[in-house]
Length: 247
Image 1 (cartoon, rainbow, N blue to C red):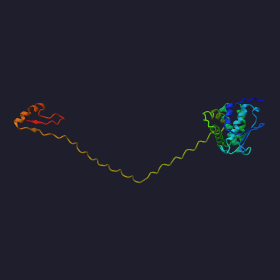
Image 2: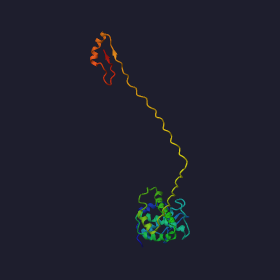
Image 3: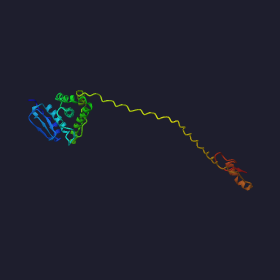
Image 4: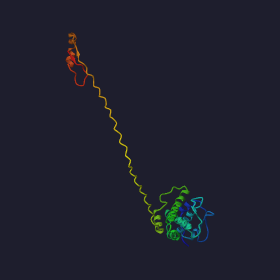
């Protein structure tokens, strides 16, 4: 009997999603979209890593219900629609395996996914769309329980393994945009340039008025003005408006 080691953090995470899970004897696991429930085998029947990887896988299918992410479920076995949905679930399963450190069943997960990859490997766009939906399912499970999505929900290591196991051709480079034709040269005569506007000369700046000399003829007045003449002189100083005394 394989050793089963419970993982309380994983159990708590998925219990908060409130998906209806039915454990039934056997070795089959399935998600029934009509009754919206997951059927799993008993925990002690397989190893803990294999059990939890299948738990991740079936919960990824569970997110595709019409009341959640509304993907097309219940496609016929072996059809391209079923293959697309299985690639969605495997992508989510691998990311959740790295998210919770459940790495013991990666080989069986990829072996299961390659069967469906072979069905649609001729349509890279369909595989890319399926892998995108798988990543969306992982983020959706975190958002459903009002949990802040941590930066390591989508693992770069998971993306590396997915690219190695589900190889895709490089995305086509979009065709360059057409170069616009140059505008045809017109033969019409261009309009002549407008004549320059006449420059209006600025008026001359007014000069300071020149005071006329004060002529004093009365001898008595001249005698009283003699001290002022001696003080100020008989001519104005540069830059002043002092009067000119002429005696």
